[in-house]
Length: 246
Image 1 (cartoon, rainbow, N blue to C red):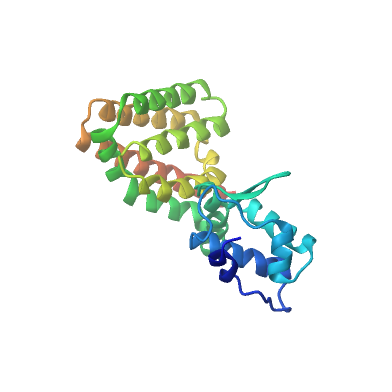
Image 2: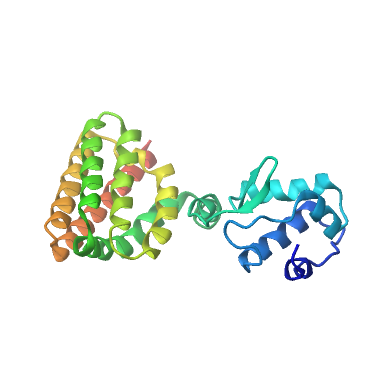
C-alpha cells in the first residue's frame, strides 16, 4: 500500500460506535477524496484488519456495507475496487428523505416542483434532441398505448417518457436532479390514472410534447409540458377529493 493511502486512515477507532461502521465511514471518505480512484482496489481484508487493529470479519463487514451502497464491487479472489458513481446510489436515501419531510403530501410537492423544472427542460430537449432520443420517446408512447388497460405499466412508461426528455436536453445535471424525483413519483403515480379519460388526456399531451420536440419547436414544447403537468396536478387533486369523500 502507498504511504499516501496508509497515512490517510486514523489507525484507531472509537469503541462507542460499531467498528465496521467507523471503518466503512473512513473508507467512504477516502473514496470521496479520491485517495482511491475509480477502478482502483482498496486494501485487502488482511491489510484493513492490520491498519485498524480489528478482525478480518469486521473489515469484511465494512467492505460489504460499502458494496451495498454501490461504492465498490467485490470480486472473489481479487478484492474490492471502486466503481463509477451512479444515480442509483442516491435514489433510496432521497426517497426516504422525501417521505420524512413531506409525508402524505409527497405527491403534491413533487407535482409542484415538476411544474417548475420540466417545462424549460422540455424546451431544451426540443433544441438538442437527436434521432435516438426521438426513437426512445416514440417507443414510450407506443408502450403507453399498449398498456392503457394496466395503470401500473402505463405509469411506468409515462415516467420513462419524461426521463428520456430529461436526458435529451444537453445538460448532464438535469437527469441527476430529476431521476430521484421520478423514482419517488413511481410509488404514488399509478392511482392518478383512475379512469380512461385521464389516460386518454395523458396520451394526447404526450403526443403533443413528442411532436413539438420532434419538430424542434421549443416554445410549443414548453407550453405543452406546462399544460400537461397542470392537468396532472388537477387530476391528482380530484383523486384526493374522491378519497376524502369516502
